[in-house]
Structures are given as structure tokens and as C-alpha cells.
Image 1 (cartoon, one colour):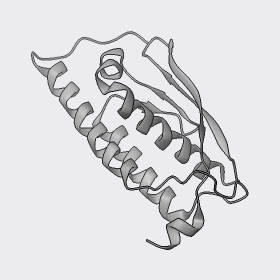
Image 2: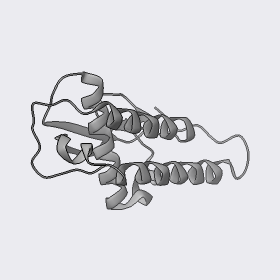
Image 3: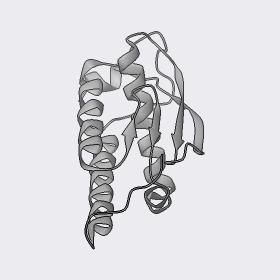
Length: 140
């Protein structure tokens, strides 16, 4: 998909700032979710986690140029990908994996997530654990 020209000067910079702000919100949501080392893989993600993840991704999709497929994949502009940095990319990947696990409705211990640029080139592909320790979530 070719990149379209922006209709007015400064529109690209404004869109870029909105993307970074959306990622900051997403990062904050991902940081609130505890991810323990060895939970029970037979449990689907809890509803509270699914709701938090879905809200964060809906905000991201609404306020940025990132396109989500709901199955662990996302299309993201090259420039935004580069400026995210490794930590935010990891947080976004974890969030996409949890969202895909929630949408599938069945227990999954891990999912493969894929990031592509606007032309379809793979920027990153990795397997992410979606195990959640229910005992730690119950104590909060």
C-alpha cells in the first residue's frame, strides 16, 4: 500500500506525535499487567486483562496509523517503528499477543506476533508467552 501525501504542511509531524502519544498510553497499560514466570497454561486470559488490553489497542488504533489484525499482527509505518525503541516494541508485541489470546477464546500458552511495514515487509516476528498466573491477579 503506497503512502499518501499529507494534505497540509505539518500533518505528518502531527500524526507522528499522535502515534507516539498512543504508544505511551499503550506502554502504561502494559506495565500495569503482571506477567509471572510459570502460570497454568490451561487457563484462558482473565476477562479483566482482556478488557484492559482491548481498550489500550482500541485507543492505539483510533489515534495512530497502526493497523491491527486481531490475530497478533500489526502494520506500522517504518518511521514510527524505528522511533518506538526496543522496549516499547516488546510491550506492543506482548499486548498484541494477549489480545489475540483473548479473541481466540481458548487457552494458548504462546502466540506468534508479526509486525509489518506499509509495503508488507516483516519488521519483526517472534513468539510471545501468553501465560497468566491467576493467583497473582487475584491478590491485586
